[in-house]
Amino acid sequence: MASLRSGRRTVVSHLCRAFTGPGSHLAPERGAPRRDAAPSRVSRFCPPRKSCYDWIGPPDKCSNLRPVHFYIPENESPLEQKLRELRQETQEWNQQFWANQNLTFRKEKEEFIHSRLKAKGLGLRAESGQKATLNAEEMADFYKEFLSKNFQKHMYYNRRAQHVSCLCSLRHSEQRETAHPRPSSSGG
Image (tube, rainbow, N blue to C red; front, side, top):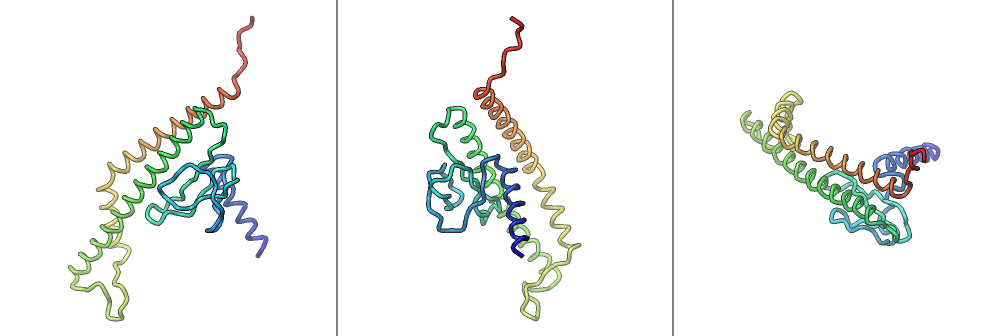
């Protein structure tokens, strides 16, 4: 069992790095000492004070996204600061978008179920006291309708996410160029 756990930790650690870059770690359990980190309005989690990595916190209850707490190095250049701030703004926008989207989804799903049950002459609870549900075929109608109704919103999200991704890539490239300029190719 212990070997399975350590293997899982390795996979999770690799996933973490894949999403936030080379200096990332999963957040420890609650009660960890605080450290200086970029402020986040999403989660109260705060990584250890002496950490010099980005940390991934527990999933947000509304958006289901895991917030990233960005490390701020003491000697952060203006370009690094812009990149970090862009990443923070993007994260906050993502959190807000998915929190709103998930709230809308749950609300409309409940309304759909109630209306279908009412149309069938059923209450919200079965005779056994359990919550009444619809079958998968009936719910497929809701999912199709919800996706169709929110198509433009999702297209906007994808376009913005792609745009921000390109900006981050460009700024990251600029950052590398500034730190490690390429030698001139002129044959002088």
